[in-house]
Image (cartoon, rainbow, N blue to C red; front, top):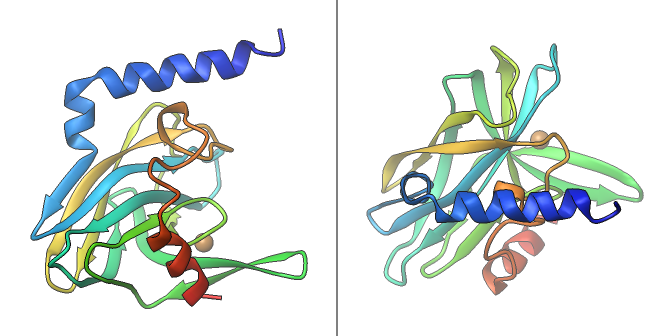
Length: 177
Ligand SMILES: [Cu+2]
């Protein structure tokens, strides 16, 4: 009984990973900048803000800067940092995120993330949400993220963002303390 829900989550994750059209839509590269595995958390009726996540990678000859985020489902998008001050979680708006060559920056729960402000409708689990990440050099990159359960920690039923163990993201988190 205890293993029923995790097992289902794994099956859902495999099904998503095996769907080729989904996989293609979930990783977009423009001018050496890749946005991979975008997703958002479902929101309850009436909640006006939602959180979205993705991995941003640069190839070894590309540096860039994330300067904006938007979505048709929200009035505006912001990039936030999240830090612990004592036992209080603090979110702060970031002007942008610098991307060094060959870096992986993972936007994920409890760390830097995308905040969708002024949601026009609730984000429903199982839906797709359009996200536009705008970069200084690469310009806009549009992706479709999956909407996962409200407390999800990763896309497609995974317990974390894929590739979330890179030195790049650790370094990045530390620079925003
Ligand atoms: Cu936030």
